[in-house]
Image (cartoon, rainbow, N blue to C red; front, side, top):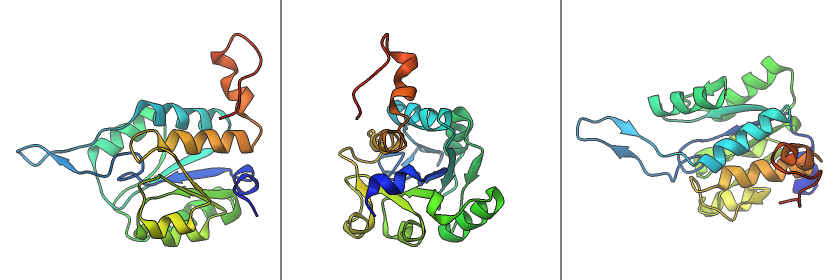
Length: 180
């Protein structure tokens, strides 16, 4: 089954943070406070998926106040931090939402993401993901993690579901926009 067909079935898309929504580097101030940089293109792509009725989740191995703030800013209520077993975490969320693995997607960048990615009906990875992740992803973005990769995945999903024109309508004076 091709990536477009897989993405067309999605009802939930989950994302890793470090290396996907960020560039993967960890930034610390002198006092040990961690901070992260997020790309606005990614944030708007996530908002577009939400507007199209797709549930969003963040599942990450680290715990960070910056991630909590970003999730709140974007209205993402399914936030799981400090997760050792991402596949188990997503499985519990799917059961809670009454969804199947075929209706779930995940975007990850490192080998720790492979178990959850291999269980999902659709998975994506940024271009700078680990080579093993490249081999298992249904799509690879042109952008690196933290530099618009999430936005590309969001636009791919919207186009696969035939919702691209609807997503673009509020921003254009005419009824159509070229697909990404």
